Length: 613
Figure 1 (cartoon, rainbow, N blue to C red):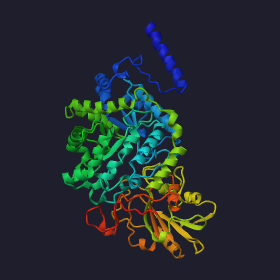
Figure 2 (cartoon, rainbow, N blue to C red):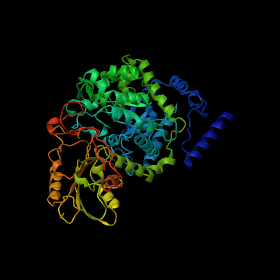
Figure 3 (tube, rainbow, N blue to C red):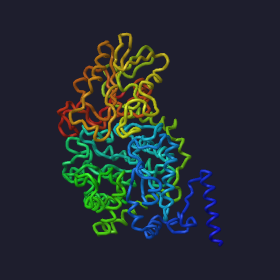
Figure 4 (cartoon, rainbow, N blue to C red):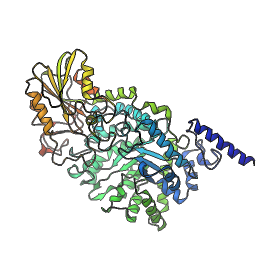
């Protein structure tokens, strides 16, 4: 009777704590908290993992290896199927899309995990690739190509720490970042996800992993799991074809594409995501040599390997999971499978392959051991619920100031005839271009939705708003998107042009990278006034502009700056001096794509180029 009464007392206490919002306490279905070795935070992680693994059924283990999309799995599904992870695809958000709603959603799903017999928390993953960019109102930092232009690993580490705070405040504990691809062909739609076209820049920028995770995983209240992606060679596909074929010798693969991943492993990155692409005709998700022998063996990676979105289903080129695909991927070394919608089918298939001996139980145990280790290291068993102390950090003034600093540091001055820049305050300045007053365009893809979108998609400062702020009250700033209405009474005209948002696949440009007709006409309208024309190029990659640059007085590469457009204005008006250097080579002509250092192709601007004031 005493034991039963104690259990009822614990239940009553739990209900009081939940009602009070103290959801950081773990409620173990087995009874006394800490009554089993794996629940004892004072024990070594390896000991806790071994104890928990020994208590798990086959269903528990296979569930840990399965990641479902939030729209396709409920809290009760997590309980019933022992799911180990949930993710948000690009644009998959709670309603309303606020930090508070994210926190509430995550806590609900986590309660489903804690209701399982062993109470194993889930990992929630999201593509926080340039800020917590799925959440409206979050701080959106420059995309990686802009951060690569800063050549500042310390700044990038600080950004990682800020992003981790915002992610933590929404209950997410795993970001699918950083992308460590070495983009070798600018026509590839993911070029902006690359820090640079040579391995030294992405390797240096793995400092962001330390920002995400801390000096060690779980070493602080905002430590989140980082992901080095996409392993390996996705930036080297022929023709810049997304999910294409990297036709490279092993020596080339190791020289160009592997070093950033070695740097990530050396920093203790907790997870690695495998690329959709192929190496010499074989999909990476089936490459046991690269995943198990090289990554886990040679590089010594001790975290877990996760697949990309439904990528296991691409191994045979046919739609629908097959037993052979599942067995091949797991035996190749994939530890967790991202299978957004058909996760029940995957679980059934994987169970069959284990039961018939095609996937050894030792491989399953290795995968689950790796996953559980990271969950213990993160402290999820002790603090599974959202740390609401950081919810208000989402979009905070402090983080926006850091983002503005990053925007300033990322600007690359490519041309400045007769010192037209920086602009003095006072007089009249004309601003034009489709990207001048468009927060969505300047933020690019992977902002609120997968492909991104034009318009006021989130909260921030457009480049035009920044110009008005920085130019000050003594400067008359006139804006017309098409550049019409300008005359010689204006001291200068600023054309903010370039690309509209896109992401992987839809961003491939095999036919070239020219400015569109609207941009060219806008610039022509400004030039007709006979005043200095300054072009600010908002783009996710170098564009083919060699024939047009001679007619421009100044050219500033702004990349995809994110929500803090005032950082661009800071450089235009001399609040800061341009220090950025090109992380990519700019082609002299369309025929010169792809172009990279040392390949003999004539460059408009070489990698590392950047003027100052």
